[in-house]
Image (cartoon, rainbow, N blue to C red):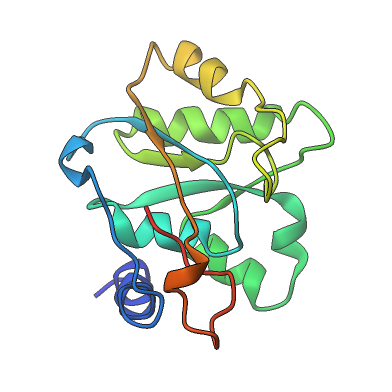
Length: 162
């Protein structure tokens, strides 16, 4: 079992257990080939929920600041995340994304570039740029909905509903 499969199993038990995550439209996810998964970003749990919900492995572009956090940085790198410096046009992150897509893998991107708690953050054009540079790679739009009424009090507002 790979580290990714292990982490997915553990976090899956958490997402489908205490968080009561539900997933709709899973039949629309291509099983193979390059794929850009564009998802809104409402909580810290979104990348975890997306990785658990999708039937295939996802590589993530993640803000460079996360890689500087002890334990978290090495962990997300081991899970396939790669850094993007949001303060500049990060050519290395674009090249990394194109490499992952060329290998026929799926990448996860949060187009707002940050958590968007109220749904009013501007969407950046990175998804369209990557799709264009990769030769119109298929894109899948995913929407995370947080339903506070269904969240146990001990979990707070971290429960995603894909």
